[in-house]
Amino acid sequence: MAKKEDPKRAENPAAHSEIHHAPVAPATPEPAFADGELDVAADAAVAAIAKLPEAQQESLVLAWVAHRNAAAVDAVARDDRAPAKARKAAKRGLGVLKARGVAIPERESVTAAIPKPTFTIEARMIFPDGQGAQLWWITRVSSTGASEVVEITTHDRAGLIALERGRPTAGNLKQIWQGWIGRAGRAPATVPIEYARARIAEARALSIARKAVLPMGLTAAAELLEPAPPSAVHPIDAESLAIPTDEGAVKARLEQSMRLHEEPEFGSWLPENPSATQLLQSINDRVVPLSEADRVPEKVDPIVNTAIEEAADAYFSEERKKLFCKRLADAAWSLYQAGRIDRAIDTVLVARAIERAGVVSDRPSEIPFVRGMFLKLIAVAQQQAAASMPRANQEGARLSAEGG
Image 1: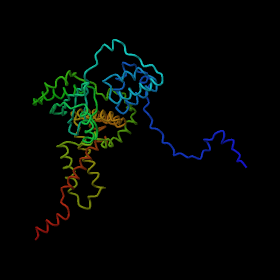
Image 2: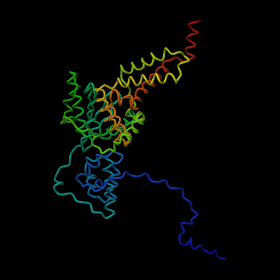
Image 3: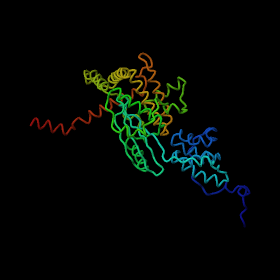
Image 4: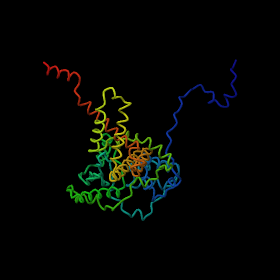
């Protein structure tokens, strides 16, 4: 006898299918873009792409394709100044739009008469280290792939201290940027050319004021280093970051600011000598007189904490506050360019906290990020001390030899 078919199965066979599939993981959500970004005009498309972190540039192009903003996609695809990944995405997007029957706007004859630029100029920087030293690059890449690069080393208290020039290929330049990930944990961040030139000119002026000898090659590199504006807005200040203003929200984020030391930007940030030496000596002077029975965490930790508080509050003079605020701004931009938006916001909040820190209230030692610098110093000193101690068997052999 034929088996009777279930009418519900006939209506919806998929509901009773015996083929089971593994659950599909939800897709990673794409960044949400405002209507103004989706409807951007062709003449503002490249600027809209350039202001985004590298991780979001391609996503905006894909959003334009979905929104059928053919003018913006075409503008990025044609413009040599657009980031390489965004241009590739835009070129692919043009094919998708054409397949969907979307008309691609034709360039005006006036635009066609304007010769295409033969080169592009770009500036990059690596975040400052714990001593205030920093590297800057300005590159000029021609349409043939040849490039010229000038590498500048600055120090926020010494000025302009080194200059190197080279002519790597465009491919070698990419390898250079990628190589910094292994060296510093982060690739150099792109910065507006005006800002880089202003900072380099500022360092040069500082060297001249200190009557220091300027590096050779400045005149030959003038085409890349000039014109330099007298000042420039920091790129992090030009971004619309969602920085909290509520006192409770700011305090909560600052309480977690010690975790910033997990980022490559702050790996080398330690207090400098003589403050570092004075802190270690202060701890030693207070702990050594204790008996062995008293050298327990319950008694040693308060001593260490008090020493850190005293050292941190004394460390941040008005001059050092200004230096740290500038260093923190550059570190925040590096984090922002790397897509670490929350950490970039935390860094901005730390800079503001240091700027307003006082002697009695809101002291520097109350900022966990600052305390983290001094705790790292103590940890490094302990590691160095442990490494310099002879191993037990080596010490035993030495004592036996001396007694023998």
